[in-house]
Image (cartoon, rainbow, N blue to C red; front, side, top):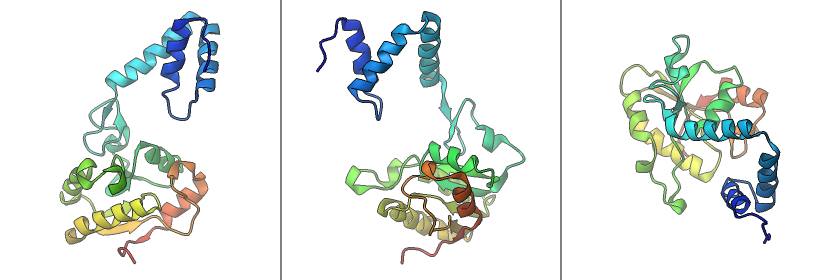
Length: 204
């Protein structure tokens, strides 16, 4: 515990410490840095965070973060809208797109099925994925979910829902070091796993 010389400083530290991966010591260092920063820069920082929280929306088609009804990826006529890559969250979209190897579009589930955490299919953006797949415009769905039990469970659930539609269902190549999160994978490895995707055959 710290004996703060200012209640205002203590309040700022308490709020900063709520951020993921930020302990109280780091939060104090950040708060003291902000105190040394010119007021106009701190105001710009605070305003950008507030504006983001108030105005950022989710793409009506893929559920990616966007400033408009359709995100830049979905609205890009050069993207292959017949190929949809299904990911867990927005960070995966950024990781895959940064490889420059994928030219299709995405669908963000907003999580994966995890009974332990109380997350079921009804809590994810699965209904909208089924609607997209049944529209007749989608030819291939790529499953790019974490290589975990929860990821495999979600893959299998999606496969059962999508398989009757007679579209190609594939998954990113396994045997590569993608770990639990795609965002931590180097771009070359991740790009290769997309290009070398294989047909999904269900749980073995």
